[in-house]
Image (cartoon, rainbow, N blue to C red; front, side, top):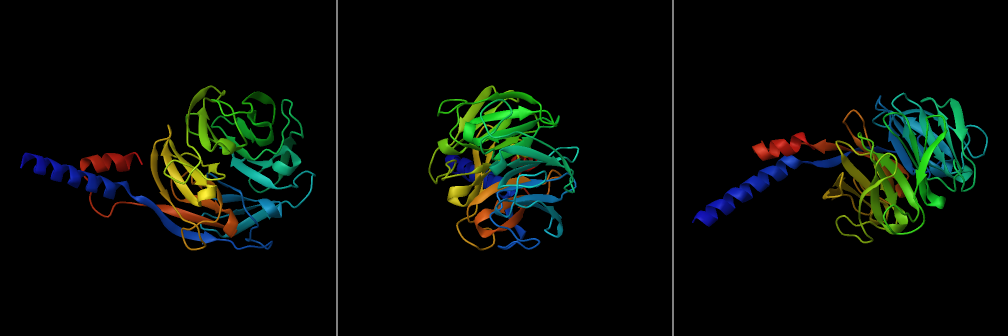
Length: 323
């Protein structure tokens, strides 16, 4: 009898905790395929400003578009080219606390930066493998103090810079060992400064200190929990949680900062909450929606956190507080 009571109590506690844990649920979307205002052609990157506005690298249209938090069009800039403010397949976008917007201009092997309304401010980089040079940079992130981290994909390394492009350091080489990369696709930074890298070719996430000292890794090729498909982007962590756009498996996965699997959502398709090759994920810094660049469907989808439908136990309350 005692065992039955203990089991029933444990089951009730687990159920209450699950209810308290909640989930991300579909809240809305915008965009269709095309070149008109508010349309996209394989958008590969997304970032949220402190205001809540959403910036999208409309990759195959060679431009940046930006919107309100619910998708109302605000503005755009750029078209195909190599001049100032022009792009060739922009695949990374990040915003500093001061509102400067950085773009990984992959086809032009450089970084450009702008005001939040698209006024050109500067650029750095050219094709090559030397310090400050790039080969197809694909991902970009800005640390709290303003340093800019770039996934230098073709050179299989991470480089980081001052806000205006003076090189501060780099790490990585070709391979599958700790601190090595095989096509690093994306980069993200937690509040404390640790750097997370989507190591696409090795189907894993690696993370480092702000200066490149190896801290840990997780993931392998597959479709199970904590496994990744043929490509993926690592999302901006929130509350030290890490979101991964699992491109090849058409879903989003969520982890602790050390890689413990927490949950997932999405499946292959065109419906609400389904994905076709999701490339990037970003969380509103104000703690609201989470946004997904649903690349193959040429749209942005966003989700909100669903709180528990029943009052949680004390354990559930603790878990909800630290979501």
